[in-house]
Length: 133
Image (cartoon, rainbow, N blue to C red):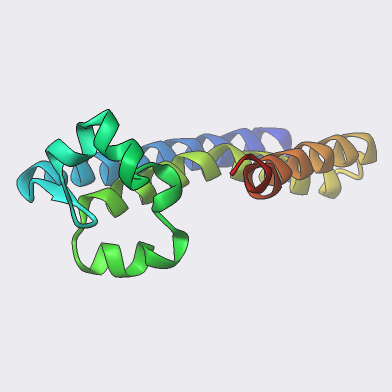
């Protein structure tokens, strides 16, 4: 893979990731307002800090297991969640494309550096939150 090709591929992934993410978030917000809430809570319940705190309404209450059922039920909260996950995985995909490019070029110093970046990203996303709960 040549560097120019890498830049074109990365730019397509960035554009696609941002467009898909924004589309899901906008659709989720529209659905959330149209249905006056999501995931069994009304908008006023979701926007009330005291109610949300008392009933555990935060990003941890939206589990990954419920995303498919939430999307099929056209629940705006899950559309927003998918949009945010796409936004999070867009730069991770860019780092992964760079890792493949460096591996193809046999530039092992940058393969190692990209591996460390990927490890840190996944460690921060998957392991660290378990210690914060």
